[in-house]
Length: 397
Image (cartoon, rainbow, N blue to C red; front, side, top):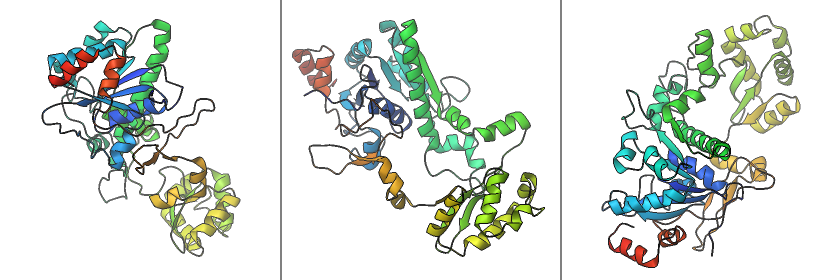
C-alpha cells in the first residue's frame, strides 16, 4: 500500500531528513505536512539504541515533530552507508540537516559534495550561529539564541532581570524560515534548473523576530527595555485584573482609546490632559493602567470580553492551554487534529495554521518507528533484495 501524502501541494518532491531535536524537524514537518515525500534518516550507530535526541519516540514532543514522515536507518559513518546516502541524494530534491557546520564535511555529505552528484539538489542547513564566522563551531541552543538575539532583554517585568520566552521561539522560527527558503529555492529551480544551499541559524532567526524592536534601534537608536505585559508603544495595551481573573486589552490610536474609555464608564479619561495624546499616555502609563483596572475589577472576564468587543475595543481572555483548546473558535478552526494509526493509540496534535482551498494539509500518518520503512525506501530507490540483505548483515542499515 503506497504511503499517503498529507497534501498534493508538494507531493512531487522528495526530502531526505537528517535533522535532530527541534529546529530541523520543524523545518521538515512543514514540507511533510504539505505532502512532500519525507524520509527521516535515523542514525544507526552502536550507541543509538533506537532513540535520538528529542525525547521518547512515542512522547508528545517527538510525535508532534515527526508526523507524516517515513523513516529508515543508516550508518553514515560507514563508507557503505555514505554510498547508500549518495544514491538516495542523487534522486532526491531536498536534503535538510542541522549538524554543527564541520560535521557534515567530515561525513562527506555537505552541499558541495552532494551538488557534484545532483546539481538540482536544494540543501537546507540550520545552525546555531551560521556556517562560518567566529562562532560557527559553537553548539547552538534556543535559550542561548534568545539571550544573544536580544529577546530576553525585552521579556519580563522591569527590574526582574532577563526572562526567556515560554516556547523555543528561535528553534521554531529558524525551522520555519529554512522551510520558506527551501520552497523559494525550489521555485527558482523551475527557472534555472539548478539547486542551491539554503542557510539560516537560530541567531539570525531570533534577531529577525525582534522586528520593530530591532528597527527602533537601527533607525532611531532606541534600546527597548522590559515592559512586562505592557505594549512598548501602544498605550493602554496590557493585562488587567477582573473580578475573577485577567484580560488583555489592546488599544491602538485615539479612536479605540476613546471607545475603551467609554466602555469602562470613564469617558472623562479620554479628554484628560494626562491621557489625551499618545505621548501623554506613554508618560502616565502606570497611572492610567491603575484607573482602568479600578473599573475592570468590577466585572468578570467573560462580561468584559463581551462588552469590550461589542464596543469595538480589542479584548480577550488569558487562557491556560487546556482552556484555549476548549474555546469555541479554536474548536471551530479544527487545529487540534487526530492522527490515524493501526495501534489504537491516542495521537492528537497541532495541525497546520494555514489552509489551502484545493490542497489542504491533513494528518495522514503517525510518526514512524525507528527505521520502520528502511526496506520499502531502499526498494523505491532501486536497491535490490540481495543488496538490502547485505547492507543489513553489515549493519549499514
